[in-house]
Length: 135
Image (cartoon, rainbow, N blue to C red; front, side):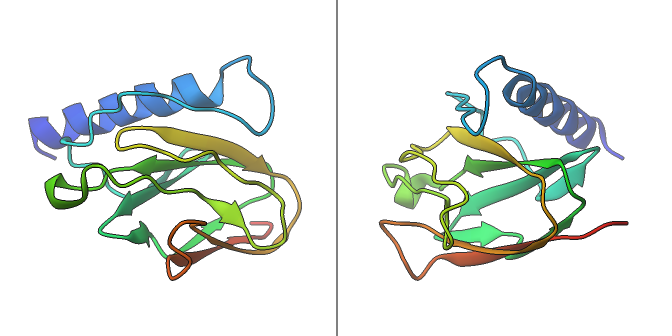
């Protein structure tokens, strides 16, 4: 793994950890000023699922996690769409983030097994899914 990828992964883990272990309670967890110029890859890092918002899409479009996993969405829109804010809003109302400006994130945990479809409120064509199941 290259030094740049290791640096980016370390930075992402640090920022996600800050969001995950804040004392703000459920389901909030905004972290401002995330450096989206780093190559953030959509991934599952430990017990944290990461969804990147980029090019008017949630990446990955389907995330599989186990019950109790914390999921963090990060708005990483590029230069052409830099002033675009997004939300992550569960179709069934399980969670709803505030508008996330570029570089902001939102974290919530999902305790119950099931399929959770979600969308961006200002851009309803942006849709994705989280599938929560036991290992």
